Image (cartoon, rainbow, N blue to C red; front, side, top):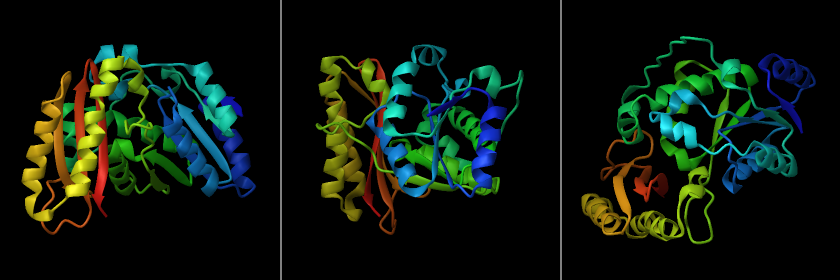
Length: 279
C-alpha cells in the first residue's frame, strides 16, 4: 500500500492510474478503523480497480472541542489493517494540508441539516460537506463508499453531490455489527463493560420496531421504543424516530422507504444506530 500525506503527490499518482483506464474507488474515514470500515474497503475492491482510503480527523465537523481532542488516532494500527485488507492507497494528510486559514464554507442542504443529528449537532453537516467536497475534489473517485450507520450523512452527501453536480457514484454499505448486535463504531472503545451491556438496548429496540412494524401504529411504536431506551440504566436518549428514508421527515402510511434511527448517550459516549424497516 502506498501512503500519501500531500494532495499533489496523490493526485499525480491517481492521474497516471486513471490514464491507464483504472476505475477509482474511495473510502473516506476518520481512522480508528474497525471491521465496518474494512467492509467498505472490501465492497470497493469488488467494484473498482484501485481503492483509496483517507484517514483525516476533520476538525470542522466537531461541535465539542473535547470530543475532537479525545477522538482515537491509532494510525499505525490503521495502516496495518489497511495493508492486510489489500487497500491500494492511503491519503493521510494533516490539517494544514486540507485547510487554509479562515476558510469559509456554506452549502444549503435544506432541512436535512436541521433534523435529527443536525438538530443535536448544529454545524456538523457543514463540516462534513466541506471536507467531503475537498476529498472528492482531490481524489476524483468514480465511486465512493459510505456506511449505513451514518445514514443521515449519506443523505447529506447525496444532496451535496446533486447540488454541485459532482461526477461520483455513491454506495451505501450495510452496518457491521458485533455478535451481540452492537453497531461497530470507533467510539465503542470509550464504553465501560457496563456501558457496553446497556448499549445493546439500541439495536434491540431497533430490531423490535422492524419486527413489529405496522404503518397504522407508527406513533405508538415510537413511544414504546423511547420508553424502552429511557428505562435502561446509564442510557440517555437523544432521539428515536421512524422516518421517511429519503427525507427523514416522520414516516406515514404511504411512506415507501422507512428507517428507524436512534441516538443516545451511554455512560459518557454518544452512539447512533439505525435500521431500514421497509424498502
